[in-house]
Image 1: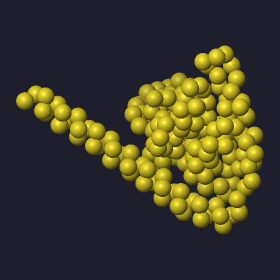
Image 2 (image 1 turned 90 degrees about the vertical axis):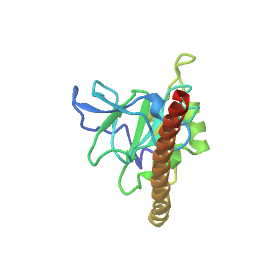
Image 3 (image 1 turned 60 degrees about the horizontal axis):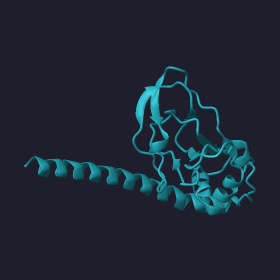
Length: 181
């Protein structure tokens, strides 16, 4: 995988600069869009941009499927999150959508879990170990066909996530209105 992916790529964000922050709780276990970010000064943590894929590297978050595909930032926006994330970014002509669907694959998760180390309850996997995942690179035409579908799916997942958030807000307003009557 190291041949086709950048692992924890360098993203420009200076200490003290205010940026969107995504804590571990914002990463979904189902779906791909993190929700509930807030603005705070950058003081460390992994940095990422649109097109990057995040995966939790710590127990039990990795086992629970905490992961996200980032497609919700503004153009050229750099956000940051927990040091317990590993970021995968596109290298060469690989579509960025490829990494999100790869990390959701059961074989990849099983591979990642083999490399967990540390004290019980706080085990982690490193980005370098995940980058050693053996992978045959698909042909350019297969990648292009994959990306046509995968990009649409990720965009629809983003739209669905926003719609669900709006419906939850509406439900809260209705519940508050009913309880105040």
